[in-house]
Amino acid sequence: MQFQQLLYFVAVAETRHFTRAAERVHVSQPSLSQQIRALEKELGAELFSRARGNVALTDAGEALLPLARRILADTETARHEVQELVQLRRGRVRLGATPSVCTGLLPDVLRAFHDLHPGIELLIEESGSHDLVRELARGALDLALVVMPLPAASPALTTVELLHEDLVVVSSAAAPAPRRPLRITDLEGEPLVMFRHGYDLRELTVAACRAAGFEPSFTVEGGEMDAVLGFVRAGLGMAVVPSMVAGRARDLRVTALARPGLRRTIALAHRSDVAPPRAARELQRVLLATRAAAQEGARTAEGTRTAGAAAPGRTGAAAVTHGQTASASDSS
Image 1 (cartoon, one colour):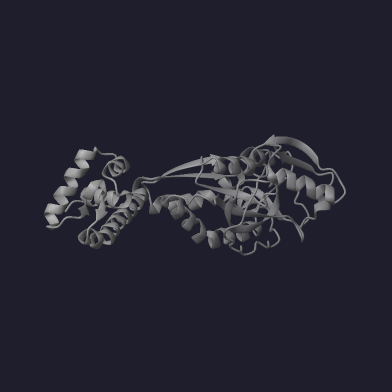
Image 2: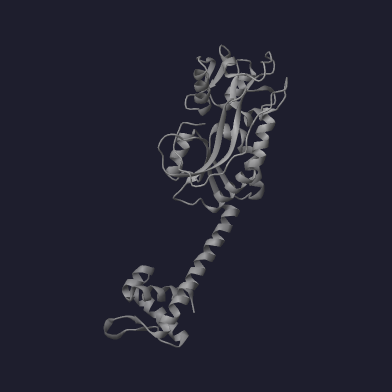
């Protein structure tokens, strides 16, 4: 008894027509009929009655049908399971992330994932949250790390919050130490190095300054994360950055913001209507497993001392929410 014979048998049983069954399984009708006859010979019983052009199951056919369907289903399950295992050996994951997340969170996570699954290719798309949501919607990404909330309308996404992270102020170690912790109003008149338009950190910082009653002063603006940190090192001004990013900038002074401070939420997103491939789900598992370490890293960054001690931060534990419908913004 062969797999193909059972496949052809089920097709005939469901269509009750040899020609239509042959079309369904993409073989010629004579070939299908020959395989059915071979199966009947193997089993020693006729499976179909063909009286007056009508095709009907015999008692033997009725007995075989549920068993054949189960065998075919089990075969498909086996194929799927093996393919998923193969994906973990030589698959790929297309992951989108905002620039600051690429700098602060991803290096350690990707290192851990690569150690577990060295054969999986990692394709990283670095962009703002608005662009990442669009790439998810068109199927160009499997997963994306975005900054929440995403206020504008977008396709339905499932999001899992990874962590809540405080923002801190970084300044050159050679510059005079600012008073700690800083209030937002302390930034009035201070030279700031500012990110490009579309960066969520820019929008958040500017909005906080305006809410405090003043317009921020920029000495340099328009850079990405690495450029902004470089300008700060050169003494061109201070910058508001995520605490995990600040924790990696060992040569900069890190100063906490006084309560309530500024905070952001990082979430992992994927399309709600399409299950991520196995390799992507494994990366999601690693991300969730390392969430506690990431939060601890954020707390450490807020307490980092370079030229002086910074006030303790308040990164909190993230709540995991499944099935949330997200939407787009220009977050980075």
